[in-house]
Image 1 (spheres, rainbow, N blue to C red):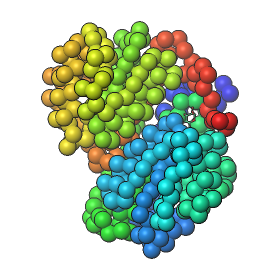
Image 2: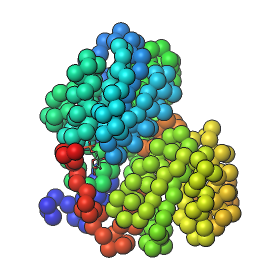
Image 3: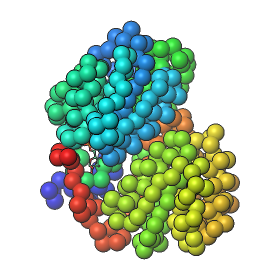
Amino acid sequence: HAAEKEGYPHFMLKEMNEEPKAVSDTLSPRIKDGKIVIDELNMTDEQIRAVKKIFIVACGSAYHTGVTGKYVMEGLARIPVEVDLASEFRYRNPILEEGTLVIVISQSGETADSLAALREAKSRGIATLGIINVVGSSIAREADNVMYTWAGPEIAVATTKAYSTQLIALYLLSIHFAEVRGKISADQTAGMIEDLKQLPEQISMLLSHQTSIQKFANRYLAAEHVFFIGRGIDYAISLEGSLKLKEISYIHSEAYAAGELKHGTISLIEDGRLVVAVMTQPQLFKKTLSNVVEVKSRGAFVMAVTTVGNTEVEKVADYVIYIPETNPYFANSLAIIPLQLFGYYVSIGRGLDPDKPRNLAKSVTVE
Ligand code: G6P
């Protein structure tokens, strides 16, 4: 495989650097004349209007994009969404009534539990849609509708570019459903398309901060526990940021909805404990900021990811990473970049191989 790394020391770093292109490849074919067009969707507008409930079912990082998708789809299209781990969904006899759409998200399209969840939905006569990266994979073949993510082959076990493209597919689907159901105006759609088009360049800009993140990561190589906090979409970002760190660095890390801090985690905060606070959502900013003050006063060391302009974070956080302005629904696409880089640099700083974390497989095709 060495040759395919194209000069990068690891596939993970190569694949992170491919994120702007992967996002652009997934996005641009679906924007035509300033409109979102999802050609591969076999659903009539009538069928889209008849959707009463959506289940998003997935494993691992794909589940985390699903958590983000819930906020975006509910917020824009006003359709109730439940996000389920595939390994839970398939065994819990889910209530699948008429008007339900099951969306299965999977990079490989071969994850055993996700495939079984898809089959469960299909066998009960429920419409299914796959968001899949590997063309012709089992889930892609069996789902009623397939939206491909165009991330290209992903080799590193820890997903980066496939995750980023799954987010794009979910944004496009949410905006499209919102439009068809009359929940957003043509102007709002146009504004969101403008923001989406900026993402590849904004991601490139964030990737160019590698050295500074590596420097910060090197100070935390000996961390034993790390906590990620955020609310709403920032909580979804925290889930993925935390998984990226733990799976390749072997440092114990947990993500908490910031409002839950007081219900447990805060007792684990002590001098020097690293807390990563994600604060991209304007309407939740002040709330999470007050959580940062709380952990700070108990000795935590705080790394914050927030939107450019929120300079007041510097008064309470020790290290602040700014993401460019975008529609808050799309903030995950930007905020995850420094968190992926952080996980990568902690891993290599600890002398580990981020491409092949112990005990993990790229695709889990057994139960
Ligand atoms: C494995 C991988 C993860 C991935 C998950 C789901 O655990 O290590 O990166 O998110 O499987 O895989 P899928 O192919 O279904 O997206």
